[in-house]
Length: 184
Image (cartoon, rainbow, N blue to C red; front, side, top):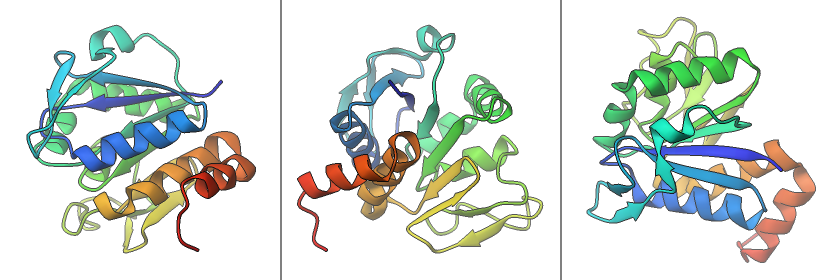
């Protein structure tokens, strides 16, 4: 079974976190939600989520993918946590997936994972002049190699479906998408 870590920092974007976790779990993917400093994490719109465990307890486990929700100041909090930067680099070195949405692609850039890549984010959070070889696009979801990025709350469902396709394949993605009754 595929395993995904979704670390939450205070100020995360609720739509991006909950949509991603929900859709991945519908696909049968094991999702571990971890709070950076506790199991109660409050999003940028005042909604408090209970994480499965604290990040410290989740660090020594093995994952196929790490997914970073955006939101502010959540993305800043992720970027300023050396454990997150270290884990992102480790995942990339081991050929695992790293994914981020909205403001959180800037965390991938800070970890050096967007050098020479195409990526998307909420407008203004990625700067091609600060990241060597980065091409910033306006695509809803952008993927290059094992790095997946997305624009924001409105693209959260597309993002989650792309994650399923990468972890389980196109047939599983299509099955979940049909069950969601998304307009064609």
